[in-house]
Length: 174
Image: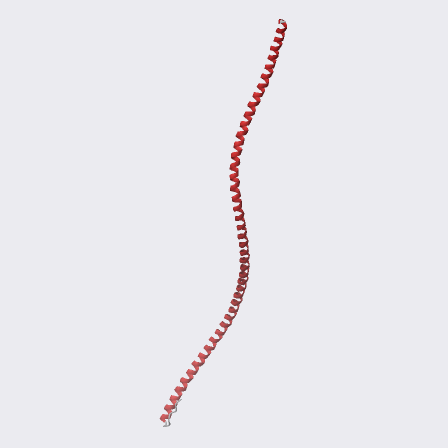
């Protein structure tokens, strides 16, 4: 029995060796998996922390953008209202400009007509002045001739008076 027991003992040791080898392989694989999972967990935890930090920063940015978007919306509406007002003013100014341009054109036309009229009147006036000058010259010539005649009449009256006083008649005054 001893030999059987040795055989059973040997089979038990071999079985125990195989079982230990199998368990050691299984535990080794489990340990490698655990280490790999632990490393993966740490990497994911680090990524999660980074993402959490980025998410907090992005939340701040999002809040900032929301406030600025609201402000931008108000600014856009204000600018649109101002633009509409400026466009209305521009239209009004363009209408006024067109009216002023029309009035200026009419004024220029009226001034040109006035200038033509003044030129015609100036021509007529020059003609009238020339005629007046000619008449004045003629009147002056007539006055000169009349003065000469008056002098001559005075001279003759004086001569007559001298002759009449010599012959005893009373002198006549003219």
